[in-house]
Every structure is written in structure tokens, then in C-alpha cells.
Length: 140
Image (tube, rainbow, N blue to C red; front, side, top):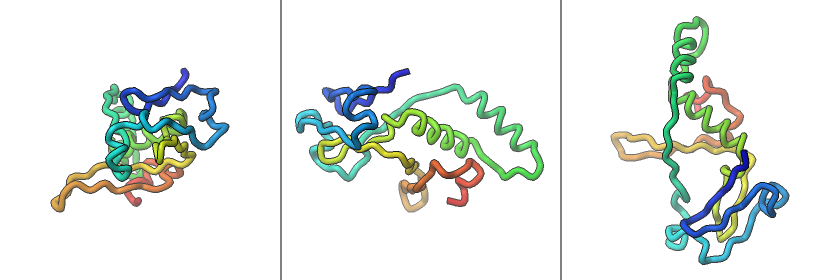
């Protein structure tokens, strides 16, 4: 399966085997290909993806983990996060940032997630999340 990265409504595609597919750390894009929000500020999240998936297999795995003795408590969020990290490692063309008109690829996975707290929305970042196991997420 060929992965493609698209930036902005009218952005250019970067295809595997092209200049930015691992041979170079970044790909330069013309200013008019930057997403509108990137022209305003580069301090916000570049993209938000929404999708759905059948979690039946994860729920079965969670039930097996819960029924096991001597196994750390791993919740469904830990398993979903672990799967997202594995997906980013499997398709590195998605683990990118758009900074100063260039696509910067990352080998490391730093995972952020939104948490609603009494003080408001917090977005903690788990650095080097690709080195963790699902059981070690809560401690980070």
C-alpha cells in the first residue's frame, strides 16, 4: 500500500520514491501550498484526523489481559495509543510536521492526547512513545 501525505486543501502530494521519501529530511513547498491556518500561526496542531475502526479485537485482548493474573492493568486507551504509535512507525510518511514551508519527517514518535480536566483542556505529550509498551503508558 503506497502512503501519501497531503498538506492543505490544494497541497502537493509526496509519493514514496519521490524526493521526500526518506532520502531527504524535508521537502520544500511553495508558500501558496501552505494550509491557511499555517499562514496565521505555526504554533497550533497542523492537522486533526478523525476516523473510526472496529475495536472488537482490542476489546477481546483487553478482556484476556484483565482475566490474567500478574499482568499490569492495561486499559483500552493504552491499547489504542499503542496501535496508533505502531501505525506511525509502519507508515513514516504520516509522522511529519510542516514547518517553514518544509515537510520534516520524524523517526521518533511523540504522542499527544487531549484530556479534559477541572482546569480545562490539557494536552500532555509523551516523548519517545515508540519506546514504550502499553503497560508503561500510565507511568509516563
